[in-house]
Image (cartoon, rainbow, N blue to C red; front, side):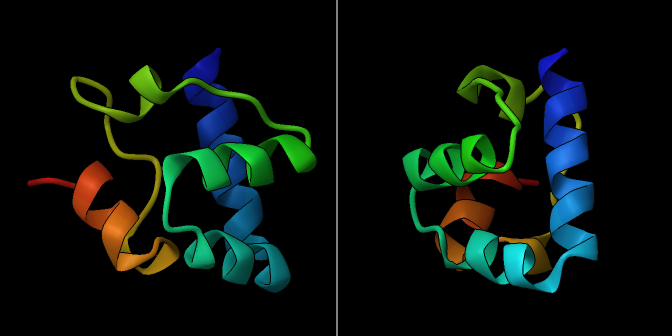
Length: 72
């Protein structure tokens, strides 16, 4: 369920420019979780890391979060 919530939040951030900008301004996971919850999405940190596939793209996240979550 958590992956579905992440996917849905990511999709909403892609389609809603204001939310996308807010997401990109998040420097810490805690900030991203608060933003997601404000928009009706809840997920846990463990779901963001491998072996799960990334649900965000580099251009959606701040450099700091992209580095943490999108390690190649």
